[in-house]
Image (cartoon, rainbow, N blue to C red; front, side):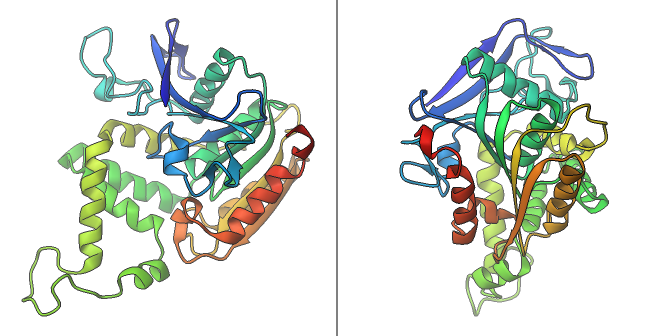
Length: 333
């Protein structure tokens, strides 16, 4: 069940802008006396981690909610209960829209830490995140050494490439100039898949094999994109898409000097067919972590499903995470 923490005093962002009151939507699973697993979600996720990441989280699964206390919050800027562009601006009584202040990865982390303080959780045993989720955890562990014991970063990045920024630019342009979040979602969704995975799933199949040529959707892959866009429009706010994609563009985890090395132990997982945040991104993170003296391990996992592999049941990936998660907590369970 999703709960809401209301922080009446609000939060001052890294830019100096102040948001008050601040609402944080979150969900918890399992016994609060058990070791804490904190989940950071990706661009289009929400607080209900056991729903959208049900391949990994739940009773008897890799992140076993019978053995761990799992916590997940909707991100700052979100549209699933946490304060964001669709929230009411107390100064106007209307939704913030693009008057919502721009924010950073550090601001996302500040909201997570605010929630944990309210829940009287002082440290996180294991933090797990895919894509943007992994980026939040990386920033958190670098800025606050000692708060996260172990971190699982799946197909994450410490610094977006020009190509990634370009994809986000096109998505935001579609939203800002044509109110076309469906176009933004279709294009982004293609980048989360792989050519091999799409070929396996769709090939060149047509909905009506012998139908006449048309400019409308005909091939099954086109109908699939139509469907993905439709369900996305029904549940997601364009403002959240604009703001969270921009957070990723400006992110540069290792731009600042670190006065002390991170004490977190890291597992980095990438996928062979992920061309959005491919293996090079995880290799770059590990190289920087090793320079800082951090304990990190990286594995590339074979998968035909592209960036979306982190949400799917890929046995080798799940085995790696399970081994990493349980290696030091068995005695505490």
